[in-house]
Image (cartoon, rainbow, N blue to C red):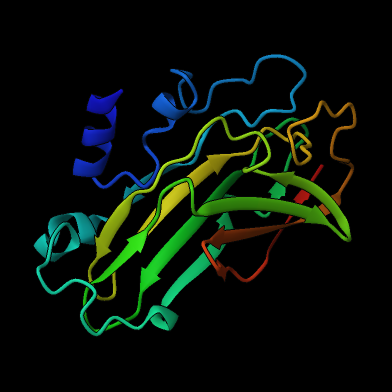
Length: 193
């Protein structure tokens, strides 16, 4: 498990420690039981340019002059409309719009993938999270880190109690919001058929 955490940190995985956090369950695998648990923890990657940039992994001046209001969070899905049974891939992207490197905690302890439909709270990645971790990364100026979460089209509630109901389909619209610590993304709207 320690080796997985070190490898994840070395290669810029935002939450590539998902296998360790979920007790060895591989990312993207089907949940066991009644479907109330998310299938996986978020998995992540640095943007290609950030991975090649030495300042993306370490910088003695990281944090000096970094304005946290210029570190932004955005949410997106891999499609706008999903066919019946098709699972949405949710993405949380953290971008450093500063002119200096910034240290940002992009661990699973800080991120949440939330889905709503109107006033109905459908899903939160934090409801059934088995464990969480901190992962402080230095993000170079103008660069981003992205975490992906494959949503299993399931409902969750706080405390991870079993939920019989499934999200509606038939053209229903849903709103995905990503959160990292106290920063919340603009809404990303998608449709389930």
